[in-house]
Amino acid sequence: MSSKEPAWVKAEDTFQLMRFFDGIDIDENIVATYFIEVPTADPVMWAESFALEQTTGTWARSHAETKEIREVSGGKLLSLFKIPGLANAYVMQIAFPTRNIPANMGALLAAVAGNVTLFRSESQEISVKLWDLTFPKTWLKEFKGPKFGVQGIRNYLNIPERPILNNMIKPCVGHDLSVHIELFKEAAYGGMDTIKDDELLTDVPYNAFFDRLS
Image (cartoon, rainbow, N blue to C red; front, top):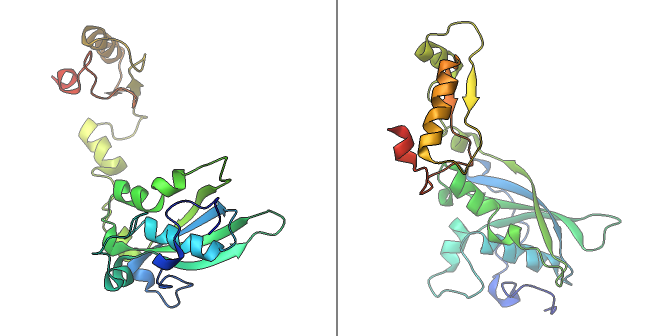
């Protein structure tokens, strides 16, 4: 193993289970495409270790991580293509079983863009970028779409045709509840249909979320 490879890349730990898996069920897997730069003599082993790291495995092998568990829940290396003209650069495709990923964005991002995609080391010259995702239709059907939709919002506000005027409270953060209330009143008296907090203002001690709601 090259001294430049991450600690979680272990040849003896891959079982050769993930090597260019053929005939996966596209209805049971999310396929992620990555651009990777890895200075290693065995990029296939690195890619297989990547697939395990994001599904069943970690840098230390667990005795409960059996071959059977890896077969049904482990990530599968589908393809690995060398990019001409770029040293140590590849396009990699990994299949992630949907049985591991419930239909919510947090779980999806943790799986396909988790800790190893954030791993960027100048000393190890490793880089991982998520390029594309392909979803099975059965998994996408779990997302029911907007609660109201455009027409539902218009009906709720009783604004059938004209543009809906929205205001974001500014400054985004830093002001206390009393200032927030005054800014809200100014927007309301000014004729805004909807008023929202800036996405940067969450639940902070000086302007708590439930205090703003009340």
